[in-house]
Image: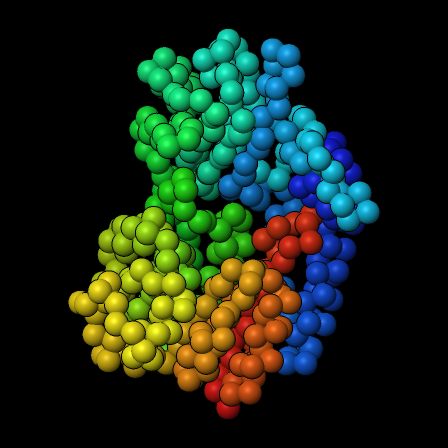
Length: 376
């Protein structure tokens, strides 16, 4: 990928390396962190070099009568500068976003004040099947005049448009897109909401899920526990390899989407519960009762496998203690440093059998990894 803004835009920091060199650098970093626990080669899953990101947000920079997309400046000596730079291209976004974002900017600039007055950001959420949801964010109250202009944008760009301002959300048609992914020989349908978490790189996401499925197939029995399940990204495909599934997530919006996705895919062996990871640990250990679990018989589960996909902070001590009692652990991590930290405890009871690296974010330092552990 090449971009005229490499070196000034803070979005991509590894622009001086070609993509293969980036992969080598990331693989060395993850391998070094996992070396105390795993000595075999990592399984590497690369990304398209460009047009890989299905979710993006751009600031809006006002200069006189004109609006432009803007990104934060490249840090200098590790210190991020204030302000932003206007951008004229962004080759990392997938084509359903790219083909609309510049036409959208033209429409905003041609709308006099209706669409651009106090507009401060634009968010894009798109699918591989060419659906696109555009959210315009404002520092002012939105009215019917705005809605009429935004409806024209929907028709002209063949997309969905929403507006947000303080304590206001204007939905013109839908607040979601529907993604279809071919995973391990099956097609799965996912409703993805504007304010919910979604994996940003669809190609690498499929590879991550299929790697997790490969580990699940090695177990092939018992019940499955998942923490941080989100909208069911891993849950739905992995449910085919277990008897019963209990999946937990703290976000109400994500649980709502997960239930929808379960119904859309005709899957009946998953129970979703709105619990934080720490609450899940308390519930399963019998420390505390939750009204949200009043219709769920936790004693009916015999978990053979658990999947965790925590935030960058990694797992809390209670969750580590809980999953240490389960025979098989699939740990997906967005921070190899906290993964390595958590493995110091988990490898007291389990052995790392497989390890992988997934490059969700080319041209940046960020990298995702996964390990499969089995009880010793």
